[in-house]
Every structure is written in structure tokens, then in C-alpha cells.
Length: 285
Image (cartoon, rainbow, N blue to C red):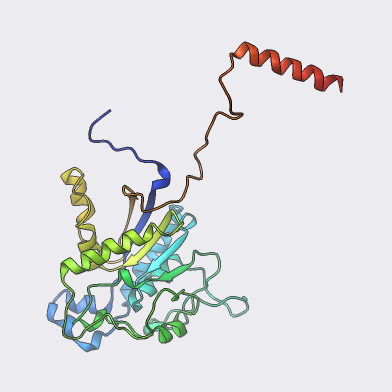
């Protein structure tokens, strides 16, 4: 076998579909002038009209390639632009109040001009703080209260967020790159506590870049480069993560033990004779 190959049991792996949010209003000006990220005008930045078009394009892709039917849960950063992206890409079709279910997103959230989005026939969407963007200083990365989000995104699950207010973001203290990478590793380890095997994650460029930079050191340099490169707005990349440290404990759902019935091996002619005798006895009955 090629020494560059690795072999792992299937049940010790998960498929992660990593998505960076679509274009936000802060991206437009911030790409031209980094200092604009300091502006309070872009607090919890929403998607642009182009961002919503990017959402529509990705939604079409995940349905055409069959991915929409495989994903068991969508995990999203609890910021406006990531949740808009998550529900827009992976949510149900247009919401109607004639259906007995809560919408994933109300109409016109973030001045989007969008109609409400249904929660029918789509995977659950779960908001998780661990996959938030670089914390601190930049108002665009500060979240609203959970109670406000719950009104805007009624069918999104916020139960894992402990504090209603944003206690993680600091106006005068920026999370270091090392702290962000460690938070990312903690998030990936937490994924092993979940039973789902196909997981979509909607998050941010900085979170993805600094977290994925900790992976790939055991790969070919070109593979590591592929893992570590920056994400474009609304880009999706599917990757397999392997549990090398027995963090997960779920048994395989496809492995089969064999040797049924159990017992010592019997020569095939003896088995054939026994089966013939059993058939004779059953036939006489």
C-alpha cells in the first residue's frame, strides 16, 4: 500500500460542509478600507442584495447536487449575516401562515426585502457561539441579544447559547489568533459529541482560516494549502474529519460481525448434510 494513504473506520469520521456567510454590508467597505470594520454603523452586519443573490446561487447548488437531502443538522454562528445565510441556503421553501409551523426567518429581517422562510422539510438549524467570528473591537462581529434573534428567527434553535446578551465581545480587547484557533479546535472536538455524520456549518472567514490552519500538517503540502486557503463569500467546501483520539463513541451502523451463527468452523460437507437433514425433517412435518 502507498505509505501516503491512511485508513480509518467509517464510523470514526464525519463529513463537514463548511460555508462562509454571503456578502455582508461590512464586507463591501471593509475590503476597501480595513478601518471601516471599526465603525458602529456595521454592528451585526446584515447581507447585501448581492449577498442574497449568492445565497440563492448556493441554495440552487446544494439542491442540484443532492447535498440538501444529506445534511442532518446545520450549525450556524449566531450573527445576523450567518443566520440569514444558513436559513436562506438550507431552509424550506417560502413560508405561508396556513402551515402549522414556525418560520425560520420572518419577512424583511435585516431590511432584506425577503419573504419569510419556512422550517418545513429542512434540517434543524442550531446556533452555536463557538463558531463565531474573531471576537472583540469590530462592531460587525458583536451579536444582538438572543431574545431579539428569537423574534426574528423563530424556528432556529438557540438553546445552547448560555447568555441572552453578548458577553464574549469586548469593545477594547481583540481575541488573539491563537485564542481563535483554540476556540476552533474546541468547536471541532465538540462536533464529536453529536450523533450526526453530515453537518453543515455556516460561519466566518477569520474563524475558518485560523481554525483550518491548525489542520493538514500530516498531509501533502498541496493538500494542506487546499485546506487552509481563504474562503470567498458564500463558498462551500466539503471535508472529512477523522476521530484519531477516540473522542466519539458511536458504534458503526453498517459494520456486521459475521460468524452468525457463532461456534467452531464446520466443514462445508458437514453443513450441507445437516441442512439436507433439516429440510427432510421440515418436509415431513
